[in-house]
Amino acid sequence: MSIRIAPSLLSADFGRLAEQIAMIEHAGADLLHVDVMDGHFVPNLTMGPVVVRAIRKAATVPLDVHLMIEDPDLYIEAFVDAGASMISVHQEVRPHLHRTIQLIKKLGVKAGVAINPSTPVVTLDDIAGDLDHVLVMSVNPGFGGQTFIPRSESKVRAVRQLLARAGSSAQIEIDGGIDHTTVGRVVAAGVDILVAGQAIFGASDPPRALHDLRAVATGAGVQ
Image (cartoon, rainbow, N blue to C red; front, side, top):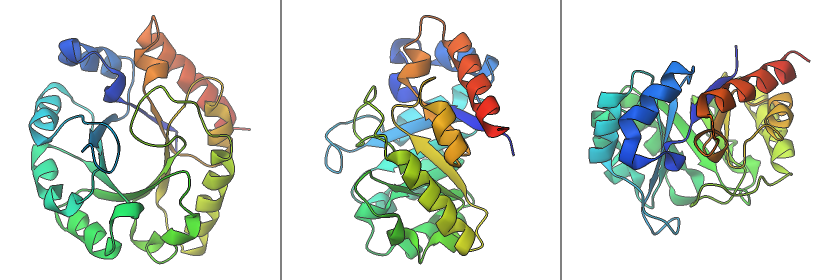
């Protein structure tokens, strides 16, 4: 399967959001990554279901919604209703992770678990077979534009091994510090979905930046 790129709207210009969505979709974005932060689990506030619904109206590609919030179960249905196609919740906040994943699946969208840089991969051992994707955070969540944590490559490899042991076809997504200097390394490690924010929307030519990321990712994937 080819590598998919999910530009992170956290780095977009919200004053021109519909325009930026159209631009990046025209450039070939496969998904749109939507970061939802509550100011508790992470030290930042972003958006809720109302904004996600507005994004859905402007977008044609699927919405990949990443819930960085303390009690996602309370809001999962609202984000599904708003137009999410994929939802990731954090392993670190769910004492009953299996129940949460089943809720997401019951509502008809792809279900994933995100793990922070300090969270051991082994914590996914008993849920791996139920997942559609695993989101590896290669920075500490909360803010865009952070520096990639190098050991994230070995973490991706460990997730790939865990999924193989579980007989799971779940995809691996990575988020944090992804740019032209890191994309080849993480694809070679086994990533399927690349989340990139500042590397795309912070570039002088965002469509060209997306094309360049895809070129590097494609090259790494065929080596």
